[in-house]
Amino acid sequence: MKPRVRFAPVEAVSEYVAEVSGQALACRDQGHTWRVYDIDGDSDSGFTRYYRCACKALLEQGLDADGLIVSRRIKYPKGYQMPAGTGRLSREGRGTIRLASAQSDLRAIMMRRQKRAS
Ligand SMILES: [Zn+2]
Image 1 (tube, rainbow, N blue to C red):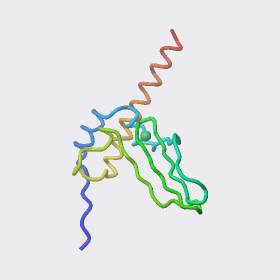
Image 2 (cartoon, rainbow, N blue to C red):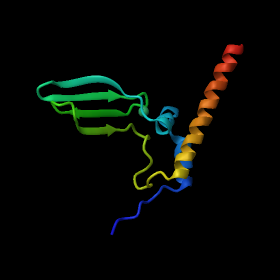
Image 3 (cartoon, helix red, strand yellow):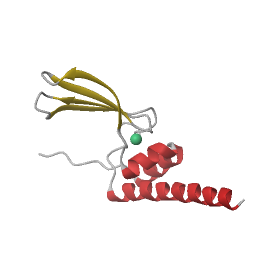
């Protein structure tokens, strides 16, 4: 029997968005912006590329000699992920994250407007 997906309660997601950094919230909402910072290998054996995001998440991507992705591992910074066992994000949970991210965007834009006006 296929195990049922366990979703994070919306209250747990609300607690999470109150604690997490603004950049992590933006990444959860819109996805990471990866920038390569190191590379190993060569075109005969393939490459391992190392990426970093502004939220401090690290991505290690393995490419074979044909350029196909053979491995992909992400290491998240402390506090980025919800506590272990909380469950997956439901549609409502994603909405909670999106709203918190939009409120953060609004605050940042209001501050920029105030700076420009003064
Ligand atoms: Zn990120």
